[in-house]
Length: 96
Image (cartoon, rainbow, N blue to C red):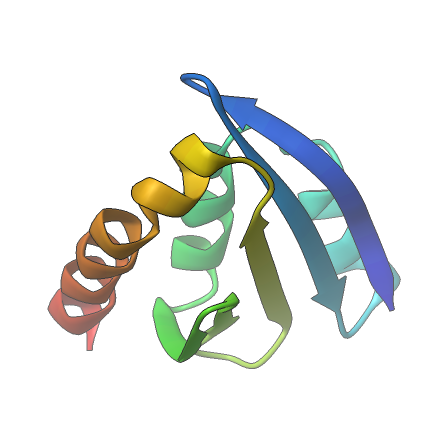
């Protein structure tokens, strides 16, 4: 079920974020996220993460309960996409 589908502005970068979950209880857990750090924390609570694709960025939680898709909406977000992917990759690898 799609729980979040909105633009998030973070340090001038605009990112379209969609979060899909497997249940209403997990949906309630993610529906209040407002920035990328909060999204990462929720995914970490579900056992860590695995990157499915880099552009668009698509991440699934280790337990398969949460799928996060993020697409840059402006030039600044696109310019830092690679940096975000590398940071997320290190985070995901450290948890596996």
